[in-house]
Image 1 (cartoon, rainbow, N blue to C red):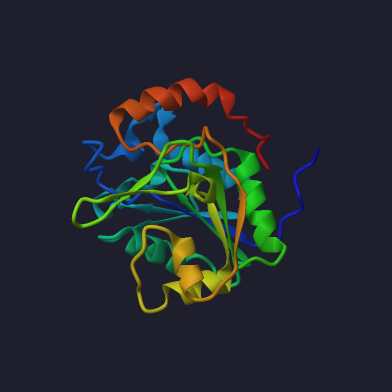
Image 2 (image 1 turned 90 degrees about the horizontal axis):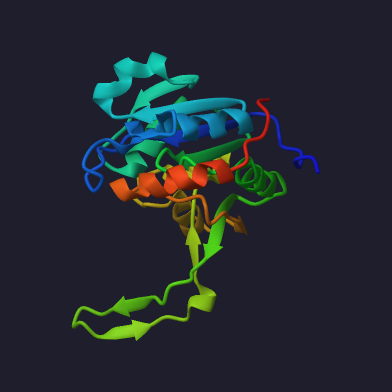
Length: 225
């Protein structure tokens, strides 16, 4: 089965501007398989889009030539600042902009295609989701616990796709959020949910690299565009 058609002028922002506080070092450069984590994320972006902006820590921008990106820019203090730095480098006529965390190296071509297709079909944003399998409890300030109904919960992944104008409006005023789709929701935009992939893990701790290495052969890679 062929991939769904995608609109012209699709750009990606790969966010790799963090310092890896929980990881203990800059996890975007940790080796997974035969190359750095960020290289896997860039490969997925390159295959799915027409152009790629890579956001790095400011003191690493000098290393731009190592990476397969059209533009490399310095990130900011917060994730939202880094996304905005990348957004400033995306052509203004980009119809769809996809934001992806470099810490998710296993995102498959199918996930990239699904979020882009949902925005091409009219959504302001599209996010991949997977079911929550653990029991989730909310902890009140006084320590009281409330068990949430996990059947109504989903875990959200990246890549997340956006109509270009919707993402720019959402970031006007420089708001802060850990999830760009939340900013679009706050603007009244329509966010579509598409099936994510349980293998699309986020590398947060060093042990996650061992899991990612085991999952790597299971993530299918489409031929290069």
